[in-house]
Amino acid sequence: MTLHKITVLATVAIPTALCLWWSGLLVGQFFAQIASLYEIQAMLKRDAVLTVLQGI
Image (tube, rainbow, N blue to C red; front, side, top):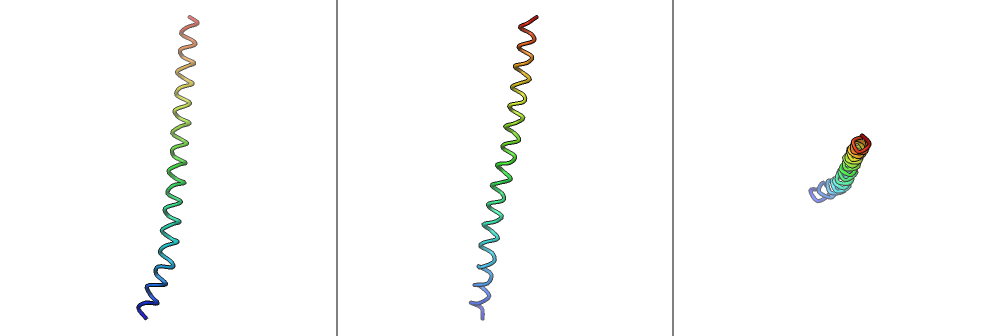
């Protein structure tokens, strides 16, 4: 009876752990893309300011 409980627990726990790990990777990648977009936006603003200053 104990072996059956361990098998059921492993059958549920392993896919759950894999799903949580995979979703964590997706969330991490999502936030990395957002950070990258903010970095690109900051670079574009800096370039725009430099262009305006060079034109003065």
